[in-house]
Length: 441
Image 1 (spheres, rainbow, N blue to C red):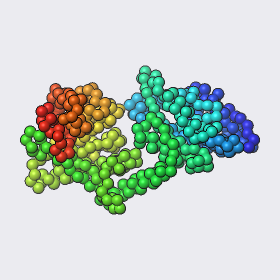
Image 2: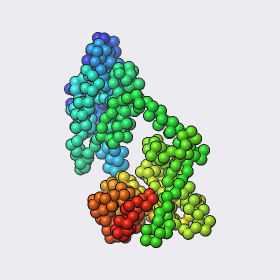
Image 3: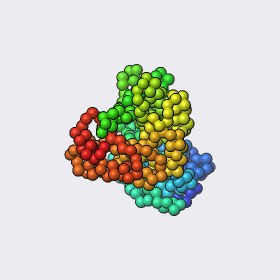
Image 4: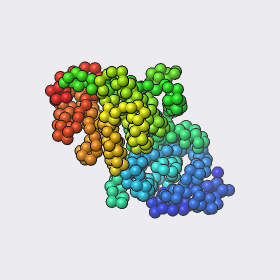
């Protein structure tokens, strides 16, 4: 196919090096500069081509690959943790970070590669002139290495990483939309496997994607069809042996697959946003059950509910708790909300305001799985929490691991010195029982 070369006009200084690194080849019949240089075909923040333009460029690059009997790789790039930057430091800093990432990417690309921005924190790459699929790996490794140096932005030193999914032309598909869909699947696999990495598409991902879609669609009906249920794990005081609380555990009685564990459907609920209405239902149901137990004559005890970060920060958690307490008639001191450490490090000002409002309602707040995350002492000082819950991995190994024993002892002393209650999660009666008693639990 005859081609002409047209330079892409870059609207951002971050793209200056990209101009020299990437050439845009167009069929000669469709090479008007009004298309390649029009702002309508470029991202206004970074100056990069948008999807409309990169889709057209893909056609020309695919034709070149066919002639040369080579391959292309379409790479879906997603920044890890970008929302946290926007929420905590503001969109202006987030925009500067995207520009900085664009410049770092451009410095790592070859002349045969193309970079575009999808929108938000997502980019697309077309890696051209590949002799085989694995040849893309060296370019992707260079891209990831380029992000290892912190970005100095607005007085902040920011570190970031990306998760990338790769689909190869013509092995995984011969049209842009098919390859984009498969690259997106592979990117989600990279996210699920720890982030800051890349994954090539494989056919097994199609089955996984279909299963995920089935679960998501099923979850949308599960609430209305009363398929969700709460099971309660008792909390026992080791000194007295008395029941002092119960933790609400979410389960899904799927009509075809039977009882599903939360590890299967909670991540999908969080990614789809369904965790917010599901979380509201969990709080309301737990409060109603606790009130029913009290009306039945059982001694009052605390019912604990775990909150997801999405539910805490995006939903109106204070209004949900207020409504659940009012409708059930449960006194607020008998509801405990479990916060993960990942919640506490996000947008600290907003988290502080929410925890203060929840504490003012009279509910108890605890930090779940303490010791496995960031465990910053600063948030213990500022946030209105009542209890620390020691991660079961430490308790399970108390009898055999000196480090677990030392860490547990340190957490116990920390709780005592700050006046916080302690909870140790275990199942059954493991060997660590006598050792936790020695520590004073």
